[in-house]
Image (cartoon, rainbow, N blue to C red; front, side):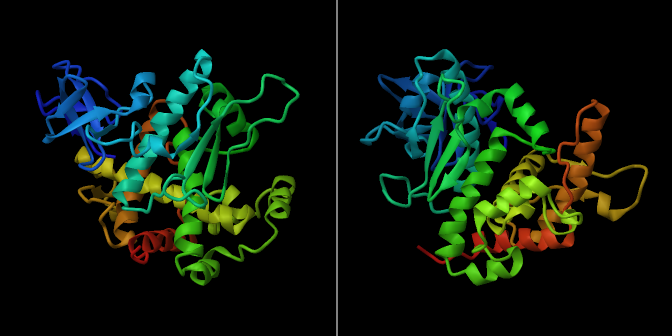
Length: 354
């Protein structure tokens, strides 16, 4: 993610902002230009100051305070590029559902920023009714005895349990499952990793290469997960996997590695936007030093990305500890994990042309 600024007054903006706090102009995200734009109203549409010759209008979900993305004013669709991937949304007449869905949409739009920056194929269920990427945001049934909604992926359909947007419930699940990190954005990044395994690995000619690193994906998936929850990860899992859940099955190893790849490149882009330099005064160890001035979305070499990432995470974790908070990035990138991250990087950058 990068920083944005208001074209009218120069105020620095967040990706999620809908109005400039300095000059008061409404804001919207132009996905084609990949920028936040200040908007001048013109009847039912807007002139985006970042693209004044392209009249725009807001996505219909802006009416629910769930989206700030723009569409071409002359188009026929009423939903933005990201919201067109929604298949099911919850009953928004229930205030709690609306509040939780708004949080999920903020995370999903952040995800789509990265997917667009990486120029990944993004067919929705209208473009491809069988294999397109779609999202179901589902609330648990009122009956407490009914089965709970499970977050997961099935052939391009990502189901997100609405209750994950409840901070207390998500923290409870994080603790119960022994996870050092659990976030809404992390869920989205992980689950779309399964989708892109289908698209880029299975259907992209990289299956045997992937199996050589991640293992045999034909292993019984349900049995592997059951064994993982019963027995836990192997004792040496940190030497081979980015998380203990990644050790459960090759599909989960891929999805966890994919999610961490997105964590890394997106955070590094923001660090670069701030011009962050890491240079501990107490040590001359070059592995703890970095001038973060790269565009990780365009960097060809994964080693260059990790050489910036490791000093940054050391600094971020130290700052969090100074605030009495857990490490921001409580993971170890072993040589084996580095090799897997490099494979994900290669698959994304060198996928076959559509």
